Amino acid sequence: MTKIKRIGVLTSGGDAPGMNAAIRAVVRGAIFNNVEVMGIIKGYQGMIEENFIKMESHSVSNIIQLGGTILKSARSKEFLKPEGRQKAFDNLKKHKIDGLVVIGGDGTFTGARIFSQEHDIPVVGIPGTIDNDLYGTDSTIGYDTALNTVIESVDKIRDTASAHSRLFFIEVMGRDAGFLALRSGIASGAEAILLPEVETDFSNLQVFLQNQYKKKKKTSSIVLVAEGEKMGSTMSIAEKVAKDHPEFDVRVTILGHTQRGGSPTVYDRVLASQLGVAAVEALLDDQKSIMVGIMNREITQVPFNQTLKNKKELNPGLLKISGILSI
Ligand code: F6P
Image (cartoon, rainbow, N blue to C red; front, top):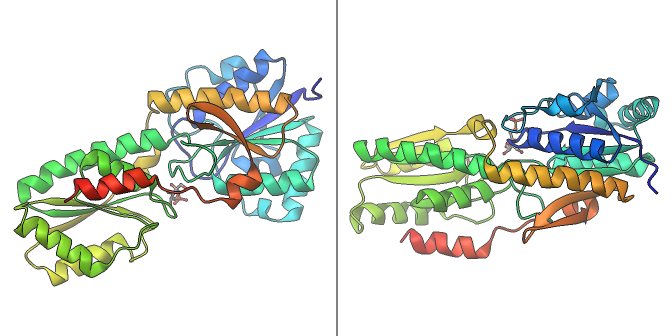
């Protein structure tokens, strides 16, 4: 029999569409199992500042369709210090919270791992980030929605690129990972995709772009650039191409935080619902320091150690076809 009577739930780091659906599933999954839930406002910082609210089933009504997070999010500097974490733990004890569900990305799980090593509290993580850069899950909550947001924008930019015969560099998020760029690049038919994981030779890129125009008689092109691309910023790459090739009419669009907002897709809502319930069940099953994820459509439990130690690789099959389709 589990000892857990009351859990806390928080969202931390960059918000991702579907976080609300996950909060809803945690709250309802807990109440279904006669466990009380406290919502912690503003992530780990809220734990330190004792910013807790009691969550009922109705507290999470009408939020499954909303982007952002009703619990708000933050990146807490204080939680990086042992004193901050001690304060957070004392507050959890004061409110009789004996288990924690954290929704976020690798920064969130790094905090969760150290917190549960230092203090006697089980923590289960739910992967929520548009970057999809967490090992141990095929998809993170928010990734699918962000992909759809990206391709909607790229499709629109393609209209104007084509009308004006322009070369567009479009930057998508992902400071360390190219998952968003690769998948949305394939889905939007980008002529080239620049990724942090794959070294790009600048002169090869120039030759490739020239060939697109000369040999393939293209009049417009889209180059999708992941934010973390190693050659330099999107703006600097575009400026260099424009300087070396006055024949190209170059423009840059940085999609930025538009990718983090919006109503979650069906996929993200369902994934968040599955993982929210799975996180509660894992806590009730005496699991600790794990992330719940999805692999080959099955719910998985992966120790934080594994998730944080291993780097998730880009799908080699997708990399291959992105090369084939852009010839
Ligand atoms: O990790 C999610 C993410 O959206 C990254 O893709 C991006 O680099 C970063 O967050 C931006 O963070 P902020 O909103 O703090 O500028």
